[in-house]
Image (tube, rainbow, N blue to C red; front, top):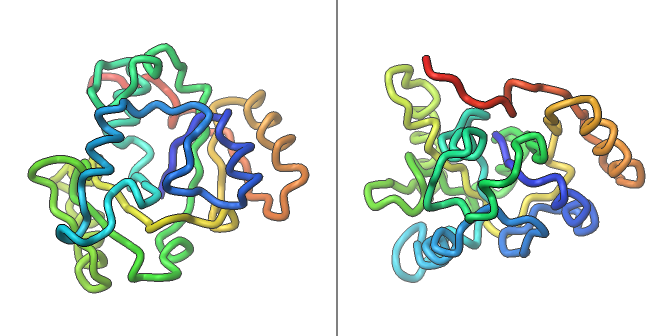
Amino acid sequence: MYHVTHASNLPGILDSGALNAETSPVTDISSEEARTARRATTVAGPDSATVAEHVPFYLSPNARLWESMRAGSTDPRLAPSAHGLAAAEFVILVSTVKTVATDEASIVVTDGDATGQLTRFAATDETWKRLLYRLISDDESDALLSAEFLVKDSVPFDAVTLIGVPHDRARDAVKLALAGSSHVPRVAVHPPWFAVPTED
């Protein structure tokens, strides 16, 4: 599972010890329209929590929105200022379902963008596990690239098992930021996660 964030947001995450759903990031790549839609979309009916009350993870490092960001494509979910940012300015916080889903009642899985009109939500223990298995095992569908794994309220930083970075310079900067942290995940240089997507 992959949470993409601008490197400037990492110090705030380390200070709080968690990824918090409703904390305002230093560098926000989401458009105001996308933020509004996520605040208005509930995960399990009118009286349930909203999408914005959850920490989002992708199920692939090649998720559609992240690919749009890397390609510099126009996407209404991205803020205008995001189009001037290089993918190499970001880091990818990696975790696993088992590590994050300590409270299974706080998990929601979608089969597409969480604000999409046709997106389905699985918000109970049984249904989200079933949907997640279907997304991962379906080789003929690209739904995995749009799906979201949502965790209510916050995810402790010690649930992050790896931080992906684009190059050695970024690795050194992240390691320096982690120097005073009680939890130090592995930092790995993995350029393909940050490369401009190519046409097949």
